[in-house]
Length: 146
Image (cartoon, rainbow, N blue to C red; front, side):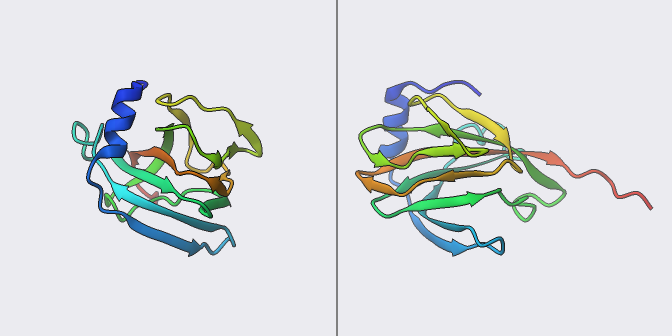
C-alpha cells in the first residue's frame, strides 16, 4: 500500500463523510470510542478484498488494547487478515498508537501494517481531532476439513 501525500490525506478528511459514533465494550473488556465513516480508496479497485474506514477521534475518544474482529459478515467466505493504519493529520494531543505494547511513531500519510490479531490501542485524545484511514485486507476462508 502506497503512502499518501499530505494533500491526499487532507482531501480524505475534507470529504463529506457520514459519521457513525462507535462506543462499545467488547467481550474482552476492551472499550472503543470514536466516530467512523465508510470510504473506498483502494477498495474501489479491489472491492472483494478491502474494507476501509476513516476514523475520527475527538477529545475524549480512545481505544483500549484490543484485536480486530474477523469481519466475516462484510464479505462472506472471507475474513480480515491484515490491517493498515494511515495517519491523516497532526495537530492533536494524545491519541498515541501502541502496537504490541510499543509506542509507534507515525508519519502523516505513511501506512503501518500488522496482522488483525495483533493487540493495539489508541490513547485518549486530549486536544484537537485525530484522523486516520484504516484498511483491512480480506483473505478467502480455508475449507474446513471433514
